[in-house]
Length: 167
Length: 295
Image: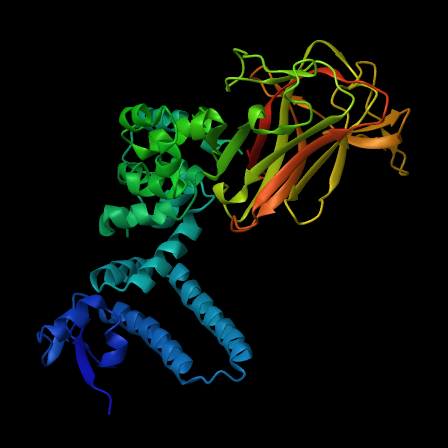
């Protein structure tokens, strides 16, 4: 029987999760090892974001368990199919996040706070792909960024990096 | 929600380091937080080649470079615009601005040149416009045969490289207008690669050949030449161009450097027809730089 832990979101929702799944978070793993994780584990993460975090962790966990159970026979083809499945799953996951940027940023913060390196680098790559090739004005609009530069400052900085603005 | 108010700056730097030098420069304009993140060493350390310190350590200017550029971003752009001599002055090293990939020019002294050590055929003048201590100047030769060998492990991986002959002509030159030279670029031991022919010295009265398109229009290739040449008939040759540093260059060929484990790449220039002489070319080196990088 798998050991279960109860995670409590910042808005007091309880999530029951297997230890193996949640141990991907270095922060929680450390809490468990230190014996600090008794009863409910309170987290500074909203229930909406925590649900996403767990969705990611379960998918990763699923992947590792399946690989352990594989025998070598027919593994190549199976791995290929699995890779396709994972790609598909990740694409869907990314599309949802691109559509709801608030969740995306919350998730970035949460992966930082929970110390989930795989999720953190996945999300950073996602945002990097979103900003690549865009002009400053588009990026400000995309992320609701206030432009704190004076027009003179902006002009000077743009001039300094002239080549980057040429096609 | 404003991303810069919720994400820590090092997280923004991490994101920017996954883009490109061009994107990072554009991002400096977005807002002060982005500027600070985009100019951080975290970002530019990622854009510099992973072994840049090792490369710089073989340069005579290593210590002055690391002290005068305390910020990695400044070092990056310095290396894009100012090639430095490395490996005991046998190569120059620079970065390709768009990708941060490595560019090298191999000094002519490092080549295998037939008759290169016979002063009646080749001499080795020191020229102010050359980066290297010596350039190779051809006095006269019948057998024109030059090979440069470069370790692929020093190059950036997963990169398509072009090899360029960097040269100019002495006051009197002969043998390069009438005869095409053969270029070949290949991995040593893998058999020979694609052969290209080029006319190094385009006669001034020779015009590029336009072609009928068959649709009522004519067309003309803008960076390659169709020429009618007595010995060869109608051939297409690459054009040399002025580099803007007192030298000309011409593309010899290209190759894909997968992981740098292909041993040495050989860049060869050859011509021999038995009785015609050549003379009056000065060679600075052969440059290897990433191809197909938008500029």
